[in-house]
Length: 240
Length: 308
Ligand SMILES: Nc1ncnc2c1ncn2[C@@H]1O[C@H](COP(=O)(O)OP(=O)(O)OP(=O)(O)O)[C@@H](O)[C@H]1O
Ligand SMILES: [Mg+2]
Image (cartoon, rainbow over all chains, first blue to last red; front, side, top):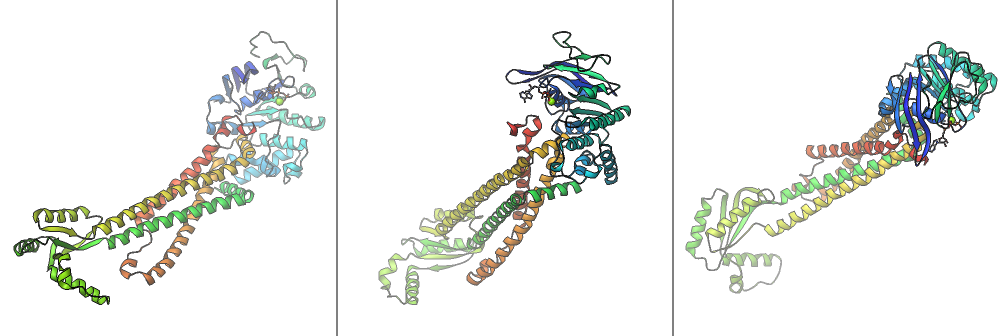
């Protein structure tokens, strides 16, 4: 589902953000990426979603060799996944309903289908009442839920979420995590970056990946959460 | 299709003034280009009428004897290009000149004094009018052959000087006209492309988000290209109406001051000119779209250049 090998990301002149990252996530897994601020989590997600290209190495997501795609292929690839970024990326001149239904409209879905799926997902994130509202009038948590709804509305096979609960109180973030577990149970692979230890604790079936100073290494299901691990060797370790 | 029109509508609501400016620039370009093409083609057809040569005058040297003249006359009589001719000796020439002076109410010269200044000549009617432009070579071959064959022929005239100058002026004006059309074309290209660029630049965050949720480049730029096509089409139709109106009102004016022989030749665009103008528009639309889209190309490379 997600396969990275020998991935390096270097910003000029010598800011090495990711170093020899090896990653292999299988379909249906629920994976957390944890690590201190500035460790490279967002950078990793930018590479995986094709918003940035690795300095070297290869990235294969959902059957797409992401680092080799042209613009149109990238667009097709993005239609097949759901992404939540830290900065929500909502269109301010369109209301909640229009924002959430965007992926469906891009895929040319029928009007009835658009309305049905959008209403359904808005209900799940608890925003049915705000459907006609514009993003500027929403709270941070509401914006975050709009972004989550938009990432899920087209039922992607892979969900990638960078700090999806960063602006939510524990109750709301619990609900969102339940939603993620639910879609994971239906077969969607979930890949989440987070600082929130409770989030990880409350999730039953999971795998944890540590990232520190640009190096990725493994944690097993049995290990306590939030504990950082030393790299097993200089080159980093394949987490499997 | 529907989403394209929604995107265009959104763009118009947001960038009304910019869009209107782009439209006016297109309209002005098309009106200017169409007027210049129209003026140039009509100038050419007027020249075609003025430039028709049907008379030639052969001037003879003083030394030409009666026998020489007879020889030339019989040559002309059997020449295929010649329909008829009239021999005018120097006495008659001088008389004609005096007659013209008399008509103007001027003093007359002494006939025998001026007779020497008026060479005997033969006025030749050609079998058909020859176009000065197209048959230039034909005419000069004819006159050179006469000069070569009959040494007593001093000159053959069919208004070369005047027509030569006129055609030079015409060609120069045409050249300038085409240069103006080209200049207008590039200026408007530059301005219109930058208008689209500006609109797209102001949309950069929106473009990024659309890319983020998987909108294809066609979905992002398609509406701009369709918008450009629509604007061009409307500007084109409007330009045609404006220029046709101008043309017909100026034609009415021309009819009142110019001979019918000339105004009869005036026409709105010929099929060839139409084709040229349409080609001009298609090329311009193609370049507008291309330059607008390529100007945004760095957006897709992942490096968000506007944030740096
Ligand atoms: N375009 C860039 N140019 C230079 N350095 C960059 C660039 N983008 C990111 N970095 C650096 O890469 C490092 C990792 O950044 P990243 O955003 O991936 O961290 P993160 O793990 O997501 O942190 P946080 O938990 O705070 O979101 C940071 O030190 C950051 O300064
Ligand atoms: Mg981050």
